[in-house]
Image (tube, rainbow, N blue to C red; front, side, top):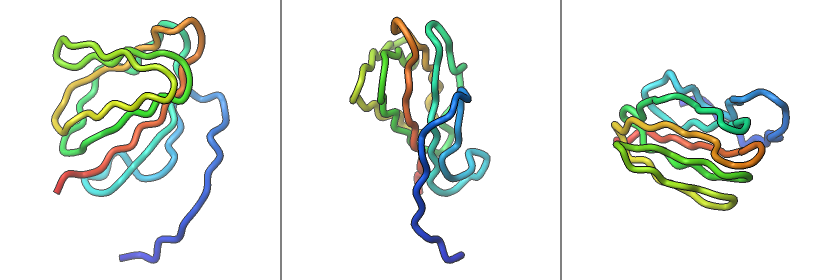
Length: 107
């Protein structure tokens, strides 16, 4: 295994999606990203595949849709999404929404 060192990244910028670390295309490991959604915007339906995921809302209000069920998340709320789950995230707030996602491969 490569020698991995601790690191720090600043969560700034204006891009909608910013990878913090990891590679979503890899089948194994931990990955994370920072998402900024404008009012009314969607991420798009996607699948967690063999990864479990948590969404951590930093600012704003989002709705996560999973199998016809809708979860409303606001500042400082966290949602767990199990492996093999289709889901979508929509900004339902009055302004920008910002959240982190973290995925990890289930062994």
